[in-house]
Image (tube, rainbow, N blue to C red):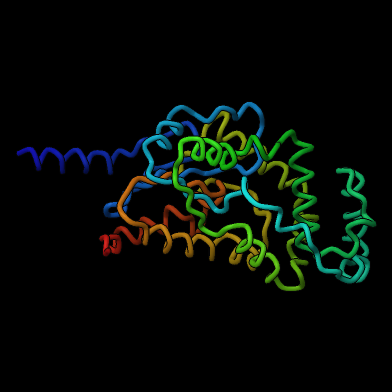
Length: 276
């Protein structure tokens, strides 16, 4: 009877998953229990401290899993290769838009003229976030990393800074399409940032496929979102038994090919029995 009651309780938890006041969901993959958190890499001061339920989840976890440990080591962007002038890589309209945005976010256009396009795109996005009042040390993964290290928790990286750098360097034309999309979707990206902040300060989306504006073309979405989700799925399913808090960018939890959806598909196929 006791075993039947335990099974009934487990089924009830599965059919009635806990809803959190921030973007997150719990998943059980065999002997692995994951608390998937949709992190915001740059946040506002009002996002501190971390929500109490998340702090409790971390305290109970065997390890914290993040995309990369952003609190350790030197910046991987300190050295840059020299590329042709932006006037040779962008058309006249794009170049004009870039110069306007550089003035808007106080970036010296001449200083970035020969940087790789992906690096320019990240610099623009970072400055845009700062202009919206966001800071890296208020970001969810930054706060989680600090709390985990203070508690002596194990940190597991899904990628690490060097792997992320290699991914960016491998983009065609030094990431030119990433820069072009940044210019094209500048205001859309600002709205998306504000939407994601709202997921933490107000409430997360009610379903796994909210209507969100697109800021990547299909090729970039495949490389920067879908391929990484598939890679993370394989890594998470290879974990030893235990409790884990998993913090990845919030957009990886929603939309087509999202990480929770991939993990659920594997669960239905019975792929998650632990094999030591």
